[in-house]
Image (cartoon, rainbow, N blue to C red):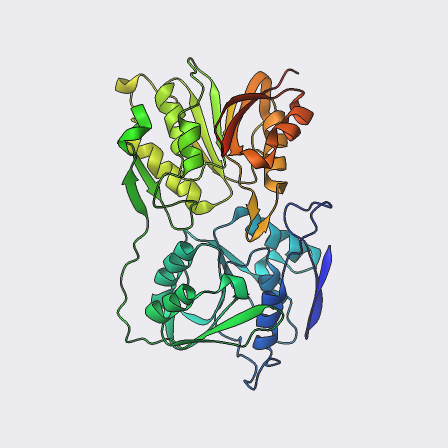
Length: 398
């Protein structure tokens, strides 16, 4: 646990799920820079009036939201908009940790309608430029000429394309000087700018070289990994998926746009497939992909219903209830490289699998997932590999 110090108080914050082995903090210099700006500490500008509707977007672990909600005097009730289930849970846990009631904030997902009027808009620049574009399109109608718009991020996260989006969708934009490798974005909203619908969700069909899956429709909401094409890891995985038959329970863990789980459902009409991701947009994408390709009617053979869960990996899946888990784990946590998510996914899969159940994983060869799987399951088989990727199979024996 680490303590964030602001001019109006100190706050104990952690990431979620809390992991003593994780050396990364729940905030960085860009969060601190923004908070100092709001208080008039940075530059010659006066403190920002926070008495209106304050919206915080993409607050990764709740640092900005918690600091604003705990502000005294002049307590603020911020609205947080996030696409991350883990980020939302981190905010809830950090509010409780600092004795701030849950009613002090309003938590919205990226799929929810934003407030109709926004007086202060604070944006933690996301890793995905597409997600930022979608968010600005959604937020623009609620912004008025007097809205204070401030973005923040580390220097490596803010590019010319980032500034161009603010300029095109909200109004004239400038940046601050860098401080501790962080930078602020200041935008003056222009109500005269035309308000157009954003390009998301994006839809495409799988190419001819994907075999029996060719022509399947794929839906991607903004921010979903590799949104405009089939990524090469998933392509490799699709060609190596196990042939399964009969009634069984399958989980597409970290489902993204859901194409892996949809392929499993098409290959085995009797399977009940559960799609799980921590991104609200990913699960919405997976549900659209599944619905567009799988007909759940009696005429289609009485197909078992699919389930779509936004959550922390396998946390909501009962012990010993699953026959097959398919997993393409991420190895980044925002900008940081980390295997923490993969570790939790593998451990959760083992708990949820029945004896004899199988975990199939695709990953970059250099990540060495076979070592962890062998330690966890007592076994690990390399099903297939190429110079970049491997597909691994681990069986739960007891």
